[in-house]
Amino acid sequence: MLRRSTIQLLRFHFSLFLLPVYLFGLSQAPVINCRNAILVFIILHILVYPSSNGYNSYMDKDETPIGGLAAPLQPTKQLFYVSIVMDVAGVLLSLFVSPFFSGGVLLYILASRAYSYRGIRLKKYALIGFLTVFIFQGALIFFLTYHAVDPDQTIDVPLLSAVLSSLLIGALYPLTQIYQHEEDRRDGVTTLSYLLGKRGTFIFSMLLFLAATAGMYFLFSKQERENHFLLYLLILIPVVLFFLYWMGKVWKNQRAADFKNSLRMNVLSTICTSVYFITLIILNH
Image 1 (tube, rainbow, N blue to C red):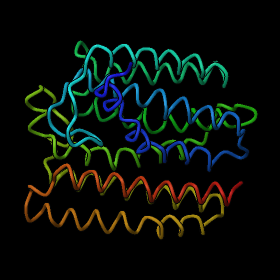
Image 2 (image 1 turned 60 degrees about the vertical axis):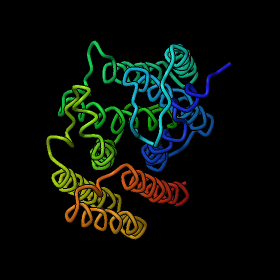
Image 3 (image 1 turned 90 degrees about the vertical axis):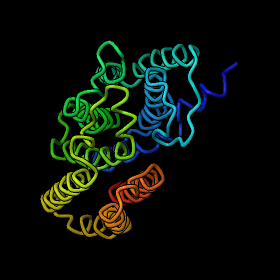
Image 4 (image 1 turned 120 degrees about the vertical axis):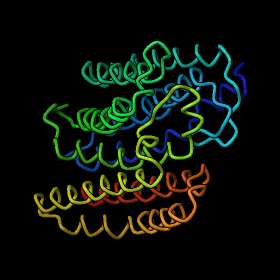
């Protein structure tokens, strides 16, 4: 019987915050293998991501708000074992997609464990921790999704789209750390957001988002689909407006850089980017 704490700390709902990269991969694939698309969703969002969430919570034993949870329960050894079982299931199920995809999933799991594991703890290093998330939750997942759903399972994946995936992840990620500075420091973790400071975090995220926007313009101009870029600007207006509103509040009072606003930013960004990429899937396929 699974404990309540185990189910809570797997944070299945938090996995949806990584959905846009998967959807972006589908939107850019010339043709979609529907069977593999479903398998990839199950592997990533029901097995691998929740397992990573759980393992991270097992290592951290957070007592203050974390991504998607205002009041996390304390983990038990069961959470550790469940995360291992889910990882193994994810890798084995990935073999039904392709050996290459399975190897990529294993690589993601290893990176995730190195990020959290107390003996390595990549997350305690500001730049290395950021780059781990930037690369593995962004470009790698786009690469694996594109490869998996392509009928020929190509490894000739568009590089610009993979980089854009990382930029979108990287723009949001420091904002999820902005309310945890003191808790992270007590745990010996120096996040990029802590180094940048609360105001610096907003500036850094803004620069990455602007870079992603410029990249989107270049991508769709190259594809002669400028209307797709205009849709991007239109659908992401709520994200930009909330970002500017929240930044203004933090400029006046840094206490506004809290869990509640960070979660709002995360949810709004996920909804808008997901709607955008779903729209592209419909237009392209």
